[in-house]
Length: 73
Image 1 (cartoon, helix red, strand yellow):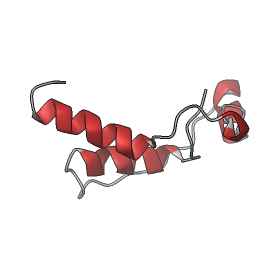
Image 2 (spheres, rainbow, N blue to C red):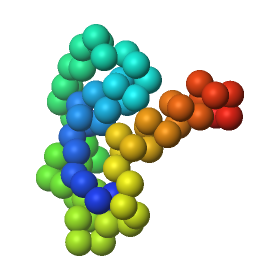
Image 3 (cartoon, rainbow, N blue to C red):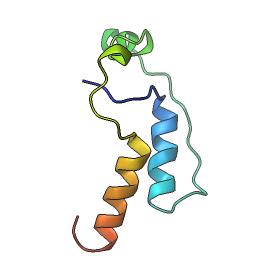
């Protein structure tokens, strides 16, 4: 299952920080090791031709942050 866009882990981290209002944090990309992470680096987890849904991670994070601030999270 995948979404409508391909993003790196640092991109997802920046989207989360923006949604939660913590823009001034540094996002440091880390290279993770091992067979599972090698598969991620090759894109083995990506499904661009079978994307599920239309919402992006940034939209999801913003909605969750808004719900949390409103006491619904």
